[in-house]
Image (cartoon, rainbow, N blue to C red; front, side, top):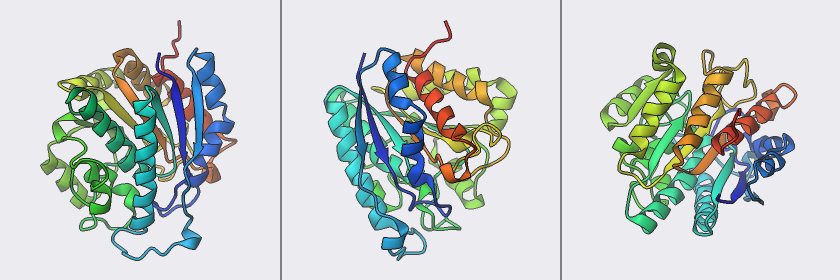
Length: 302
């Protein structure tokens, strides 16, 4: 089995609510490394990448706040994930806000292209679409833009990390979506990505949706990157997240998605983002994130 490289990215410049920069520490405190080791996997914690804080930076462009320092961190993450993938490891990236996926997913996509000339499959598990651009955003918060950049659009500073586009819409699947801006809806409809909303999960069940998502993301691709935003889960089980939205995945729905990811044997990298300890209850969200990582990495009930 591949060794696991834990990479922390304590960045919170992408969102309006502060605190997700402490997410990597919270998940480590929840025992992530030790728990993975108990699965029989080799674990190497690569530590945290340097990330600036808002107090030392200027937001500059109000339509894409802090874009330059965010892009710099994403480029650093791209290099770190690329090194781990080349070493035969599976990068487990701890956020930080979801803008960091512009670096981690780009690294996975370029690695897959290099080793087998195939595209990357991407499963984006999130309450939000993260497909705003500087032209459509109502907030200027870059954590709502990384998927648009990965698909080759804006912000250009993130889209330029690695080959452009990093992913194709036909290999990109959004799961658990329930909170979209009006113009972002139009962007998503026009993009050609596959979308399973929370209504689809309500109607058909999490297992059926996860299986369909995995089939779409694995068809014709060389591996799957899963980018999991903890705000996809209902705040009753994950209160400590950057942008909580009621009506999300419950405990078992979240786990079955990750368990089926493990069963697919297609996972090459995993992001766990938007854990915000300042809003949490006794580190419950970080502990839940740890449990989800274990499910994705092969922990079984029996």
